[in-house]
Amino acid sequence: MISRFAACILALAGLFMLVKPVTANELLSFVYLGRDDDPAYFERKSYTGLKLRELRPPVAGARAGIKDARIPGRAAGLSFELVELQLDPDAHSTDAISSRLAINRNSVFLLDLPEAEVIELARVFKDRSDLILFNIRHATDRLRAEDCSAAMFHTTPSQSMLTDALAQYLVGMNWRQILVLASKSETDQTLADKFEQSARKFGLRIAERRLFVTSNDPRQRELNNARLLTADIDFDVIFVADNEGEFGRYLEYRSMLPRPVIGTEGLMASAWHWTWERNGAPQLNQRIRKLTRGNPSPLDWAAWVAVKSTVSAAIASHSVELTALRESLIAAELEIDMYKVGPGSFRAWDHQLRQPILLHTYNAVVTTAPIEGFAHQFNTFDTLGFDKSENSCSLR
Image 1 (cartoon, rainbow, N blue to C red):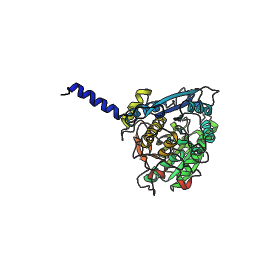
Image 2: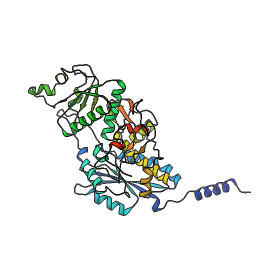
Image 3: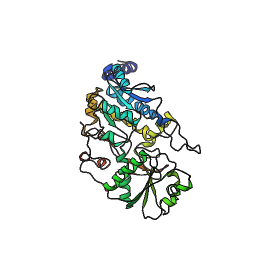
Image 4: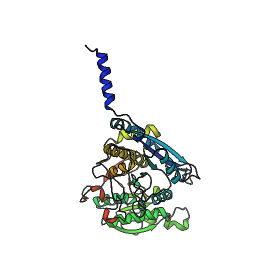
């Protein structure tokens, strides 16, 4: 009779025979690519010394994604690693990508680089279907349109998705007349333009668009005084485009009419918010907090879901080879658990991740978009951002 100890040994041996050993060809490298001199992460303070907008590299999201991938990867006989590369000021990202591919051909890149550099990479690798680059940071629509790339996937939502989400909410609340306030900066003017496009798309009316300046100069009172800027006009909501945050934080409770504020202050639209409490979000937030000692940001989530979606594609395709991964990522049957409402998937025509948008204040998620009542013939998430017929990009 076989002893209990011997039986356990035989059972374990049989289990290990079922698990296929991982070879070098089954190791997928996630390469987090950033810059030491990235100006986005320089400390910025207002003239009073306050930090109004604090941004940090979202590498914690990527680290959490790799940790989450260990058990499903082991079960599938696949292995994943995270390689963190910070480029010197004189280093070129194209060279870094080529060098890394020479070390491991099965490498997926998470791009935490300035916008101009990401656009350049999209152009350089425009026709590369054997390469996977994840844009985890930039919302600019041009990366999903005229500068779209076969190699590039987007886990952060586009600017049009974000402004469409706000516009849908206004329609749902029947707040239809909007006063738009924007500074003269190119970033704020672009944001205001995008919101006006979304407003027209969903049948809202722009009551007026007015310019504000950040100044204490009494000669510019009509441009820096919230009460004067919102006078002599009727409106339901104020949309403010103030990415610096110096003017917008003084807007609420100071307008001529008692009206809600949306945009870069008040009600905001994001891919993620640390107060989201459904779909397993608290557990994900806790895992990221342990790594970063701060609240998870939308960019943390974008890095995490880039890893999550690629791991899901690798398991579905039983491969870490890049061409197979790319086809799996854009396959209609791939469903990605995003810890948000509904499963996500990538649009085949511009490689944007379909996802709900969280509409939130600074300390609470109010609701998610798409808003109930907005329908699409194929996928409700495609009511946010450019649909296939509206987009100049056509990828596979």
